[in-house]
Image (cartoon, rainbow, N blue to C red; front, side):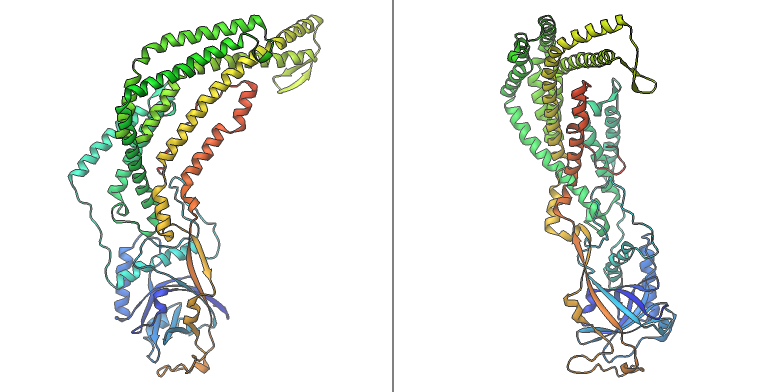
Length: 603
């Protein structure tokens, strides 16, 4: 070791109190200058302590921690020192004592030889009675679908590796001082048979939801199919978690807090969803006739009557615009015929509207209010299907005319598009070509306002339908990803969701540690059995820090809503949609925003 070393000692808060008897310090020696003290054993010799530590190591195997060892000795004022053998064999040994209510370090030894240096004592709270409190170097990731955060490789010991041992200190204390957590064996019961039947039925439902219709999966086309797929996948995952994870049944356990909170938050969100669905379903069933009548009148008014009135208005120079009479009359007759055809096709389904309302009501008792919103979204998509057709026709005509005008404009300028080099090059046209191109360009220019008016009319209606479906998707997200339990746990106990650590220098624990070469206020330190007087020792420079766990901000528990907003803005408020509207490209149907929040699952 160097002549002047800096030793980092992580000291439990419990050992800052006065002790009744001397004892060995157990913990972990991490590297050449980092020691994590877990507890004190004051009722056994070194052989017995090592036996306890071996038992603990066997019980905690596979945790990725270093072997727990004896790291020092803590004696009371005036009492003797420990055995020489374990101290002389230890690569790093803490020799400390207590004087009244204070703690002092005699020496830091390496294989029995005192090493001068500076000691940075970091006091931490082991929280024996609160096993869900633990330390993290970086904020906890509540989104289980994201990969875990990995720190870059350095020559220094990572802080999280040290904090993992600090978090395990409560397990060492519990094991040594009794009350170890027994291993819970799974108990076979009829519920296991029922769960297997549920998993088998769920697999059939998932296969049905993945059926392709016109090259697209049902979950991508239908909101009901997507919601059913999401509910089944979450149910299967929750059942697997319940059967495999003990934290789901007994409570949070440190690093499993995110899984615990995710499991019970999903259960809480599903319960609230079903309660709302039952309330709304009861209302829909009780007033199914009036609701179906109101829905039919609203659909007829907004999807047929208003559309016919708008087309008739466009035939008579709307807002003073002088449109081409021939093209205007042709387009108006075409769309009016399509509206009439849609009324004939959709007329038989109007008698089933009350059945749809009843199905939506009863679905709330099974799938919750989110399933009712999914039924509403699919009903809106089916009843406005004709406006999508009109939009497609108007968009294609507008796009073709725009492309043709662009090509004729290049011909008018004596240029053409080079397909191989993807650029505009000069070109020598014949007089006949220029004449015909100029005539066509002029003709299409005069017809363009008429096409533009019809295009803007049906684009506006299509955007209204898309935004309505988008609002329904947001409401589905609010119900499917309701963070009610996250918020409750964050408010009740902020330390359950750690967001990093901070160190306090001016804390109450600073007065609990003294330097061994100094005298206590009022009287000197008396070490009657200490073979080396304090005056002959090198003074240990001690710096005391108090390590506290910082909670994540309250806004972090709404991470699912943030993801939904990011997807919504990227889908509906992007520059791509604006470009599609300008150049006449087709705006695709609404993209589904829901995701399962299951690790490894497709969103």
